[in-house]
Length: 184
Image (cartoon, rainbow, N blue to C red; front, top):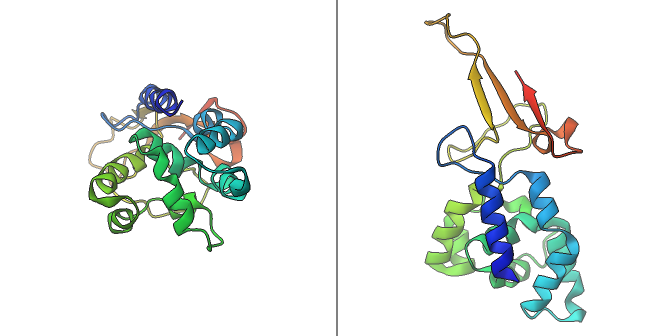
């Protein structure tokens, strides 16, 4: 079952190509559809989580789908238990920690797993725009599926204006459906 989910996640990610070549991403609405609660719970139980550990399953379902999806994408889904155990006594959810530094990842899943997770995590954490300014790391994959420069004739100015297209799930005010929306 985890191999099927891994293939589904990777295929879906490839369907959503960013305007920057080689920078695919998985939109939030598709991640939510693929990683729905029942599927996540069943998969966690297949990794050995016992019925008395249902609160741990709930921690992943409620706030760790992205982290779990990244682990599945790199073929290390069973490592979710390590993440849950390490965060057991914190109030924040697992996904609130993303992006996770490579040094922390090394502690959790070793150097090879850390390198794989670090490279892949950016495809699963494309930003959701909330109408405020924010700092983004250089590795951030912007969820733009179309980027068209509008002021081509005005060369030499200090900026450029682009028309972009992105999934609705990446604009907080519109995040109710999976349709794409154009923005300027």
